[in-house]
Image (cartoon, rainbow, N blue to C red):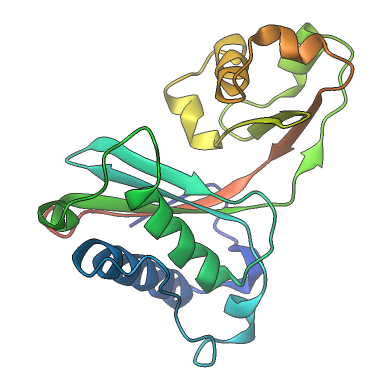
Length: 204
């Protein structure tokens, strides 16, 4: 298991809590993939208060080393354990870029859970100023204009280390081009994550 970023966990979570989140994600994947139970959520009662607090998370799946789904929330509305379960199911079956996860792929799928910090609006005077303020490898970025939304997690810096290309891809996720950053109605937000990866069962 790999933890990116600082070792101080959000919400006071322990390593046991992180292991429990992976167990929840795996249970959600199995129930939705094997039994078509797309609405499963764990009972909250057995979990400590810190795991029942609202949290924003993303769940990312890699099958045979290739991206197979990434879905998440940017605002903390659901309890942490519910948000992880919901996003695991969505990443497996509702990411429009990929086919639904198959039963034979369950043991070949790596799970990554990212817990987001609160969004922080990032004021900027120009696109060059924005590029200078965004921190590669640290900040995730969300751009918002009206109904348009685009977001990339900090992990994507590994594939897009250039600031300009990273921000261009954030705009593409919003269905726009780089000119979106020049619109006075546009808002840009940054956030950080604590990210934890569990290898595929077959790999372990």
